[in-house]
Length: 111
Image (cartoon, rainbow, N blue to C red):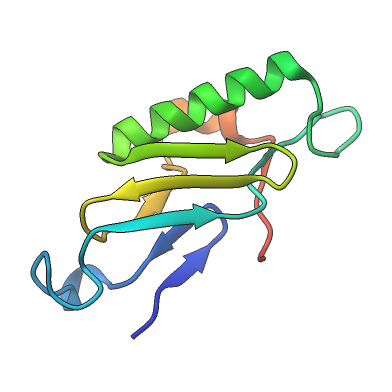
């Protein structure tokens, strides 16, 4: 079985068929989500503003901490967000009501 991706997230197993930690694909991994951009509302293009990009990376770091993942890097030119996980669950931009405003301008495209 391979992994599955949805806009802004990746997972390998549904909760009902996930093996024990360390078994199958449910092990340590480095995940890279592509095309994770903070969009500029005026241009509808990925933001190029250095201040906005610093805040976006800070937000991605916060999301890693919230997921229990370790932030590795973010490349605003490609939208590549890389993080390390100890085992597989659902990872990516979390869908919390408090975070809706922050991520409403993010764009996720299939790579």
